[in-house]
Amino acid sequence: MTVQHVGPTFAPVLAAIHGAAFPLEGWGVGAFQVQLEMHSVLGLLDDRGGLVLLRVTADEAEILTIGVVPSMRRQGIARALLEESLTRARILGVRALFLEVGVRNHPARALYEGMGFREVGRRRRYYANGEDALILCVRLSPAE
Ligand SMILES: CC(C)(COP(=O)(O)OP(=O)(O)OC[C@H]1O[C@@H](n2cnc3c(N)ncnc32)[C@H](O)[C@@H]1OP(=O)(O)O)[C@@H](O)C(=O)NCCC(=O)NCCS
Image (cartoon, rainbow, N blue to C red; front, side, top):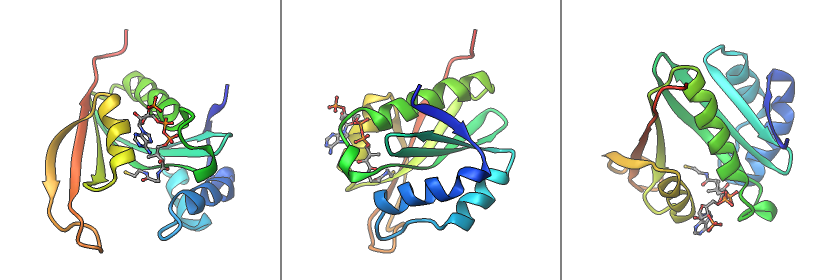
């Protein structure tokens, strides 16, 4: 299995992947450590070079970040990470999973659309470069 649940000791690994996936806005090791120490935050690592952080609050959850290193893209890593996120969220009783994506981030938007996410809102000029953010959501049925 390539996707695993990781705790704070994996902060350096996640920070390295995040820095490669988001060269202009990578989070540092400390930021991952703080996030992964929170009980509400779930970190998943794909050892081929991908990560996702998910924050669960009662029956809602939010993808805080998801990224794959450039050399390993288009191999299904992000889809695998999202599928595992959806499975775990459902088991935790989550009924709606949200995320935010730049309107011009076409690879990410295609990924999310293919996973069933739908637009539920827009934050105008949300990012520093003036780009709008879309709020996407997928509804989950209860785990059996
Ligand atoms: C968006 C991102 C996470 C996708 O990761 P990935 O591992 O390459 O995605 P996958 O291989 O799992 O792709 C799954 C599907 O998403 C869509 N997709 C992914 N990348 C795409 C691209 N460049 N162009 C068009 N569609 C794309 C496709 O439908 C793809 O399915 P297919 O390959 O069978 O056609 C990756 O490009 C990335 O890390 N980008 C920089 C960070 C980022 O923008 N994160 C999201 C912030 S909201």
